[in-house]
Amino acid sequence: MSIRAVVIDDDQDTLDLFCDLLATHDIHVVGKGYNGKEAVFLFQKLKPDVVFLDVSMPVYDGLYALEKLERLILMQ
Image (cartoon, rainbow, N blue to C red):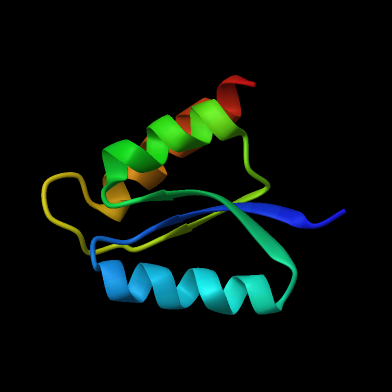
């Protein structure tokens, strides 16, 4: 059973490179996003084992997502 991950980064090249790196370590990327709002949506929809999150992003940054994800996890 491989680890299921969501990867969030506003830079497309970084996102692709990081996903490729994860794949070499048998980590299955089930979702990709470009801001904190998408991170929250993908977490709720896909229920990954782990979320890799860029902190510095325009509009909805990683800290926004982290706060929302923490609330969702605590509510479970």
